[in-house]
Every structure is written in structure tokens, then in C-alpha cells.
Image 1 (cartoon, protein in one colour):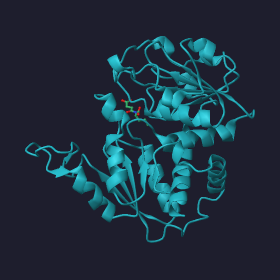
Image 2 (cartoon, rainbow, N blue to C red; image 1 turned 90 degrees about the vertical axis):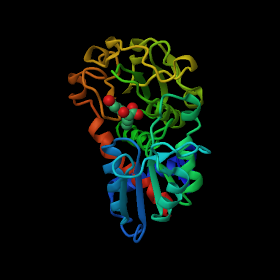
Image 3 (cartoon, rainbow, N blue to C red; image 1 turned 180 degrees about the vertical axis):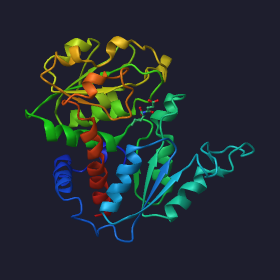
Length: 315
Ligand code: SN0
């Protein structure tokens, strides 16, 4: 397995879910598989869960781990090809990537959307350069358009808690003070459709996501209607995807916050969010602190998700 950037890199999803279950039951079952293998984790953006859970996953497999925060201590990296490097960036990705590749056996990268150029973001410019030049298998730890480690953990969580074979899973937009990428939402849609859940996406007008990822889901601008009979509510903010407003905040409508009256419309749904979450913007204290909130278990499953990916790469 040479890369993990989307669900398309998973050969048989049901096999991966079975492996995840095995890993959850016995995290140290393959604790020598990674002996003398090194995972290098490269961060262009902040991280708490991804950093710790991916490290823990590698350690559980007996791997060594090295972490580099590009913005703290590394040379500033040029990413444009063909430019005269007379500015403030001393090193080009074209050298930096193969050099990093030379120091490890698997390379994991986090590089968020810039939200300034849709073409650049949706071509996955940075991640694809890693895949092309690293000479080693590459794992996305959230790239511009997708966050597959998160979505796989989300699917593991839904499988763990679902009470019916085909649960109704609702992805709802919720307000946020800043412009955020569409990656978590795109990825959640892609994976939950692939799982054949009854997927409904709800958002205010203008927040339509790329159909490349949402095909197979129903979309409505009526949040209360979407919540009816839902088994899982997955909240997330994202900025606009459409061409004329790409990366913009179009609404901060607080009435989209997931609160107890809205949860009361559901089929006693569980609440999910990838974290970090803005309390009382995205979700009320009452809902996130309730027994129906799965956010901590979901974060715990990030180890299981990363370990399953690493297992398949090491094999
Ligand atoms: C990131 C995102 O893609 O939405 C990472 C989520 C796993 N989230 C943020 O950047 C949140 C930042 C904030 O200010 O709340």
C-alpha cells in the first residue's frame, strides 16, 4: 500500500473494519511488525489528536516515530515550482520531500487547505508532491480536501454504537467564527456513503459541498427536517466551496448550533464531532456533555484508525 489519502486507497473496507475491531481488542497483537521501521510525521498545521493518536498507533506496532513541525525550526519551504527563490524561503519542497523520505519508511503529512485557491486546494498540490517525490508510502493526516484518518475513526465509532443495520447519519453544518476547510465534511460524506448508511447532509444555502464526495447523500437546507429520526448527528463547520465564494464565511447563523431541542427531534441520536470544537457555537454544553456525546470515544478511535492504516502499509 503506497498511499492513504482517501477511501479509494482501502482495498476492502469490511476487512479494514474487522482489523480495526481486532486492534481495538488487542492493540499489541502486531507489536513487532514495525521493528526497525520509522514513521516520520510532518506538520504544516496544528494538531492534538492526529499527532498523539498516530504516534501511539505507530508505537503500538513497535515503530520508531519522528515528528517535524515545519513552521517551528525547519527552513521555510517554497512550494511553487519554477520560481526564482530570492524571497524568504530558503528550501524547496522538491529537495525537502526526498530528503525527508530518505530518513524514514513511512511518511505522514498534514497540510490544510489554503482556502485562497480552490484549484490549488482541490488538486491536492502539497500532498501529491509528497506522494510523487517521497519515495516512501505517504499517509494523509488531513490534506486540503479530505481527512481520511478521521473519517475511518468515525466509521469505526458508528459501527460500535449503531443499533440498526443501516442507521440514519446526519452531517450538519454549524456556525464558527473562522473560515474552516471542507476536508472533514467531504471525507465524512465520502466514507459514510461508502458504508451505505442513510446519509443526509444539511447546511444553509451557499454551503453546498463538492458532489465528488457527497454523491449518494441527500441534501437539505432544513436542519430540523434533517434531524428527524436521525441515529447519529455529526456536526462540523466548513467554509463555502462554490466558485464565487470559495473559502468564505457566508453565515454565522447561531440558530444552526446543535442544541437539546434539536437533538429531541432525533431518534435519541448520538452526537459526534471530530474536535477541536467551539462550545456553544457548534454544539451546546448540554449536548456535548450529555451521555449521547461520542466525541471522546471518537477521538480514542483515532488510534485504532491510524493503527489499521499503518498495519496495512507495513504488511
Ligand atoms: C480543522 C478543520 O479542518 O476544520 C481541523 C479539524 C480536525 N479545524 C480547525 O482548524 C479548527 C480551528 C478553530 O479555530 O476552531
